[in-house]
Length: 331
Image (cartoon, rainbow, N blue to C red; front, side):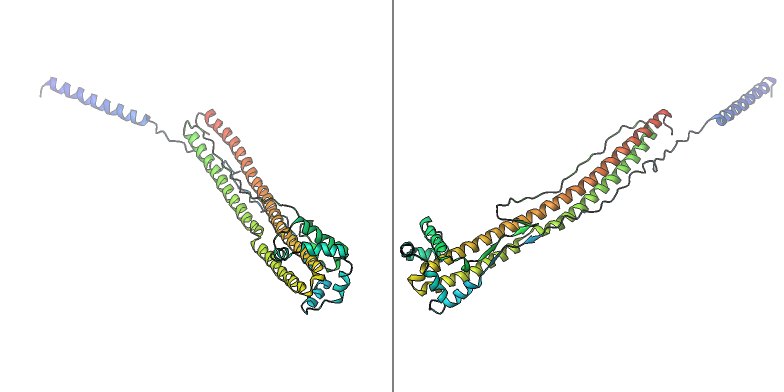
């Protein structure tokens, strides 16, 4: 091997060793970047739903209307079935003047009597004659006593408007925030998770309120009570119709009194029934209004609590997000 070859080989080896050494030095100087993990799982501790205690509506009291039949009417009706005028009827008839008796007889034609028995309306002239008979003969002892229905202690006799309500629906959106780095992403996710807890909690509370409302409002259904009132009216109508039929058999002299008592009784029966229906409508309205008030109060409690906590979480979010930026993306 020549001297030149030996020198070249030595130079090559030296170069290779130097290159290797340089490479090893460079490897030792490299730094491994470790991504920081941001944990905000315990930051939004206020995301706790406060359960509400469902409000019980104020109670509604209802007193049905009534029609009290006097003993004098019952005795007269019983006597009339015999076909013999009872003494009390004869005494009452003697109080009517011949002129009024004549006017009443003329007004109470077979057609009018048929209309009365059928429950049809009669003319104002006929109504006046019958009213005059009631006053002249002093028939108050034979007439029923009427009591109007009452709701929460208040007598009902006027038209009652119905009411209905629906659960208020509350729609809320979560504010969207931009994220610039891993810290922002982490705080945004924790915030969204906390908001979802509150939104889900609000939905559950409102469902609880609605379930209570649906249960409370059931008492406002008065269909069966109205049917019972109609039956009472019709049962009473059978009694007074029989009274009219039996009483007319006693003779023309007693017809004005029999018809006058019947007509007053018929009107009283209808009035009590009509007031009963109005009273039941008022009962339903009172129950509905109170159920609505309880529902609305509970809904407000739940939504107010939800809003307050959302606002608090947003303040925390803004504060933590600012820290992310002030620390260059670190906590």
